[in-house]
Image (cartoon, one colour):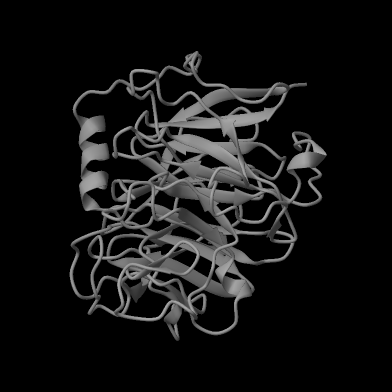
Length: 381
């Protein structure tokens, strides 16, 4: 519901520039809590850290609210100091996805392809703009998320408004294209701000976490998380007229053919990043079996009062089906908090989680754009 657009992006980055001091490496806030048997630590400071993508060698790419993409060397091991991998001619360079011998980056106005020689930690080639988005202007939501699966590239492009009829064909969509940007066309439409794109490594299904609109009855619409590539043809999520379980805001259209999501979160929770844990993890930091195949979702929290707290949620899944079906009377029924404590009882906040990624050795990485840090979570040994 917030901080996926220019107002939220600007506020978050201004917050960093205004003098919010980064946390030192040893200073994981005492309020943060993970389940028993896990540890959490800060491995890097990256201002405005957003989406994450892990490399096979254990490096971690970090999209940002600025114009650069950083890389944390050996994030699965000693975690060296982050360095700039590439600088784009556009901001925010928030979306990142590694695959097919390249790093793909989504910015406000474009999708970029950067060659990635194996184990590279600095780009030796200029970023290539392969697709244009927000061709009608730059108002509204400013981040572009990207994901790769089955030789296809997907880009989530947020709306220009809270609730309107878009004239820009790239807005409020998830665009699909080949890995060179050719043949771009919408795969999902009427989807207000699909930020949290995540690929199930076992099935290659691509999920989208979506920030819904404001100004409906309080607590609605529920935020959605759905595997859009598993639905045939062009997928319609109904924004701005249809929401929740095919409820209609007015009589301007029928909601009978709108896609009903498989997972929901409370209204205003604002999913920003997500990762599906491998079904058969083999790394030395593999999570226990109950997490196999499930989704970790970074929820940014709300600006609505009372404030919905930021948190990292875990959704148990098996083969892209939630273990619990949606309960339309209880949007908290399908998931539980995995990282909590970002918001104090007085509603002040120590951070706001954004991107999520799983490393090749099984560690879970979580970015935080307010604190400007990247966390690493793994089972205690």
